[in-house]
Image (cartoon, rainbow, N blue to C red; front, side):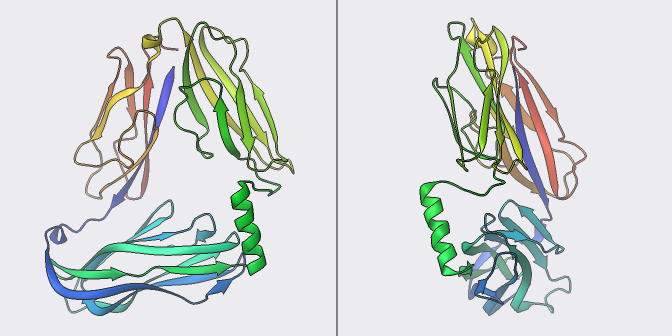
Amino acid sequence: MKRKLIFLFILLLIVSSYLKFSYASEIGKVYIETNKEIIEKGEEIEITVNLKDAKTTAFSFSLYFDDTKLEYISNLENTNVIGNRIIFVWHDVSGGSGAKDGELAKFKFRAKENGTADFTIEGEFFYNIGSLIESNFEAKQIQIGKEESILNMQLQEELGTDFTSSNAELKSLRLDIEGITPNFEKDIYEYYLTIPNNIRDIEVLATCENPNANVEIGGNTDLKEGLNVINIIVTSEDKTAQKTYTIQVTKTANLELANNNLEILAIENTLLYPPFDMANTNYKAEISSKLDRINILAIPQNESGVVKINGNSNLKQGNNLITIVVTAPNRF
């Protein structure tokens, strides 16, 4: 059985002269302002990041937003977006005469769901080469939709259901045997399982976020030796959307020969997020824009397994997708 691990690497412009710094007595407040406190679904809002009580000649900050309720629609230079995190980097090219305070950057979002949405920020701010500003960070919360709509959303979240007619996502996925990897996430569509020869059928319990959506499960009975594929097809209530979750099941008399897990996964001079766990198949990392390739160490638990790495060279600034495919010794 082949198992695919997905990595998203973000190339960030790192200004080396600011990597060595000393703490200073200067203190600044970094806070967020909005042009509106309450907006409606579909409406746009501007978020401004500001610095008070200090001036900065270089900074790098991360602005976090609720991507379940907001869509980021700006296209600013010096930014990278990783999920719900916007990374913004700036430095004064004039040698200090262009030091900034007040408004540092402005971002635009569009509301896509009702409820309350939070913005938080963290980062490092310098007032000259090697001198770090001690920064206090303040968050911001906005309201999307009317109070009645928000209460309905909160009730829906407590119930754990989403009655949107076009929703074709699973809420949960359970089997009557243990060992499925990775742990279930509604936006992960491929899973893996190894079973002994004495198991003939697997009971699959798949619950939709919208209870009115339709679920079809196939391939979970009369399992044969070798590779079996269980398909879980979710069709939205209005039949406009369909998503397929798959479980690749390897049935074998020798479980060790079906082992396609990694023992070690590491990147030269780079940290993985989250830290490596053989049950996890999705990772992210950030590297310098000066690198156009990275060295990856991937060692299978079974030394007879085969590892193939794709996409770790000719890296471009921005998002780069790297896949690591691990094939078990039995090649199923």
